[in-house]
Length: 264
View 1 (tube, rainbow, N blue to C red):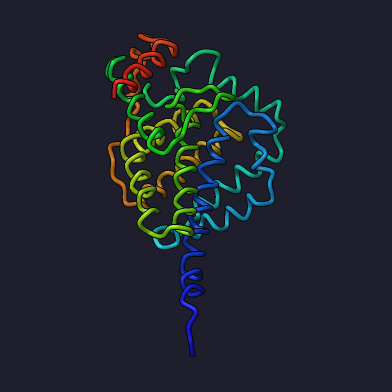
View 2: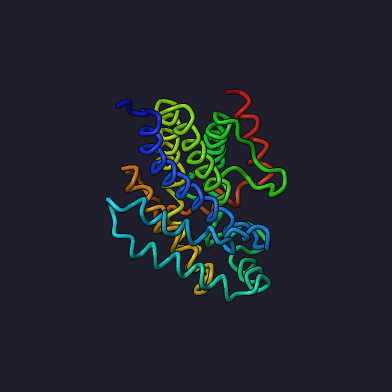
């Protein structure tokens, strides 16, 4: 009897691709949650696919965690979003973030741990280097800096989606490039500051939808780091650098970053 090896291969790859897409979707959902709340930005939370993502996501970490906290966080986010008007979310978001760069829960990586503006510029250039390596550019619509929490989460969504595509169409070797980038980006950037950011953002929120989103972000990133066996120095509250923030405007940092990056 002749065995269809391609069919067997598909059966092995399909579950791996499904896991990658579930994790990718979670990064995308969290990315949207940290943008200014609009019906469009938060539309994924209304999608019937969201509950499917929940089930698949919990299964992704079956070998390392029972998933009870992740399930609780997902259920709470979904439930609170359902009963909270978008106008209420907008008011709460503005209260948390403020009209200028927040000193209590900054949404930008380089407000954490950077000793001075030149180090901030270096970090921004490094982040841009990751994006450029994968042909990614910052959206002209949102107009956020490259170290914004939403942009970094979106980049992880992209890398996981790209890995799933590579695995399905090109095999493990191409997919591994995306895995290596994910690990490096989490270790050197997102995984270092986002856990602290989640705590600070949740503290400022106090309760409700954004408190739940913060708890979900922290738990999801904990599982992601564990899943990929990443160990890194996670910033503490004492690493929050407000002096560096006061020393340079967004425009100054953006211009300096572009110049620094072009020299490379």
